[in-house]
Length: 154
Image (tube, rainbow, N blue to C red):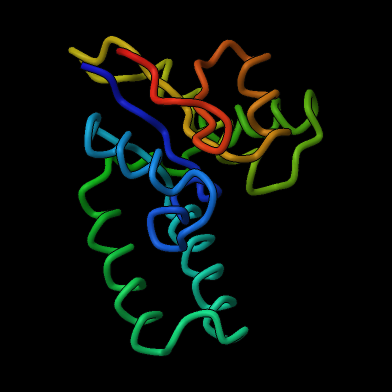
């Protein structure tokens, strides 16, 4: 069974219709075992609030999305910011020089791949961030960018 690490750049496409939204939704319908961090929740919620402040969403839409993000996150496997994950983040920061949140997402995905529960055969990182994608690939992770790729056959 595969598991997928979802970063905020891809996750937000579940709620804000933009390039790649249909592919993210199709991926999650086809492969529902997903992991992320609480940092991802914060990033998605911040994006939704910014969109509402810019007049792109109503308050009602903002609140509905915010509630759904929390419900969805509860169904995810959680990667916590434990010392081993943060050690991977330190190594990733020194190696790649990514933005802080992207460094934590990369470290979390790497930790998940190394510590996947029994029965997990494959881990893919889903991201729409090119720098993060390149760093993940250089780190040996399989990556799916829903803004550039069709759904792979697993």
